[in-house]
Image (spheres, rainbow, N blue to C red):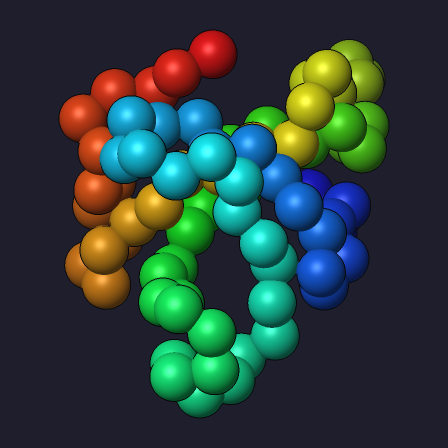
Length: 79
């Protein structure tokens, strides 16, 4: 999958952690602004090609917040 989201992009939060938007930032010190949490992108607008030839893309960019182990912090996905 190609990189479709640049640094400083705003994406919707797709889980029920209470966050509204997620901001993509470069690696930095955690005391720069509020809290820096790891997240995983689950939907992106940029089309990518599957091995079977189908192009996939979504209508918005979205991500979910994860803990350091990679497990989802929220309990469910929100559309």
